[in-house]
Amino acid sequence: MSERTATISRETTETTIECSLTIDGSGAADVGTGIGFFDHMLTSFAKHGLFDLEVDCDGDLAVDDHHTVEDVAIVLGEAFDEALDDRAGIVRYADRRVPLDEAVAGAVVDVSGRPRFYFDGEFSQARIGEFTSDMARHFAESLAMNAGLTLHLEVSGENAHHEVEALFKALTRALDDATRLDDRREDAPSTKGTL
Image (cartoon, rainbow, N blue to C red; front, top):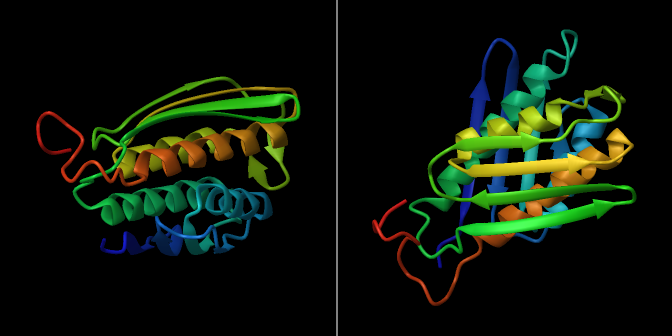
């Protein structure tokens, strides 16, 4: 099995990002975005998905957190897309629900190559430290569009920290399940023969 890894760089007038991803990792993370809560979520994403992840982002945080979160998601999505290559042998579909105290989040994913995104829920508080709560939804959407995922997410709760953290954990557990290699399959999991 070849290593499913990718390193992606992106530089704009708003952000400069270096991202390295190993899909078949151990959950190691080295992330720095300048947004403490976002770093916590990316570290959790790596840990619970067993992805090795390095992210270094210098963004225009004097404006707000939008460009940093969105562009990291774009680069991470591109890294997944590159590391998955032709997606041969993957499980493809997964469905996970994750609780965190009163909050619960669900993620249903199809690693189809056809990007779609659906979200049901809202966040109980507008901000978590320097992180705008709705950027969790936008992160997932940007990731799906750039990784070629059909992704359905839902969340409910009473505390935005718990809601967002449960959402990231449900997403990463579903991605871990869906991107696993099935030793019974050698080709792409599609009757078309390709994804």
